[in-house]
Image 1: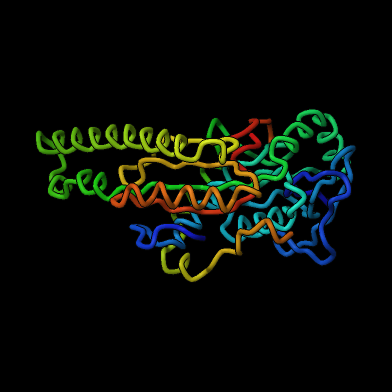
Image 2: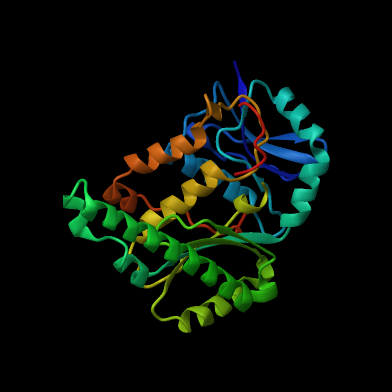
Length: 228
Length: 81
């Protein structure tokens, strides 16, 4: 069986360079589907997630992103029994994917994580770990829950402040629910390529105004967070 | 990757988490034969958890990500993360 593993959806005519390899070192090919060229590899079954396969998947999507073209990144694991099935499926959603391509055209994604040492310092009372039950345990649990609520509020505050500082430089943003007290907020920004320098400069100003806060930036990425 | 000069978490670990979070949990879902859930358990999220749990910090730190610079060159449809 020769199934089709999917990496991304690009405008018609924008296919992979010869020799590009993807997941499990399989060749990457372009398959035309209406207004699109789909980047795929022929594999017999859906690949199981692994760090290496995720890296290779992303590397192919990155290869599809150029100064002129922003592809629609596809989530890991999308596999079809045949290229014909894939083409049929993609063509059935032509309007939706056409809209997505227009929305992300000329843009990249940046990720920001706020790391707040002040919040982290108050969240983990080590002494409570040695007490498995009883009042001390419940008190420790209550403190951790309070710390998590404080982190959530802090994360929302930071995301709002950042949104205000960056203004129109961010085409769209996405704020994820904070996971831990260490990282009160995780934000993704969709930024026009032409605005990258201005975006980074404005972000540097934001950082300078908050010396106690660590902001870890990643990217630019293809716009994974903005094609759902 | 640019960012804070002194992060509480090694930069390589954050990069890996950022990569996996995007590739395994975001991006468009075209549907197809990928098994995305079994018995209500989201396997993509489960796979992400397992992958992150199995990665040791030294191994992750020693395997640099590719440069992230685009400027160079299941069933069921969940419709997004």
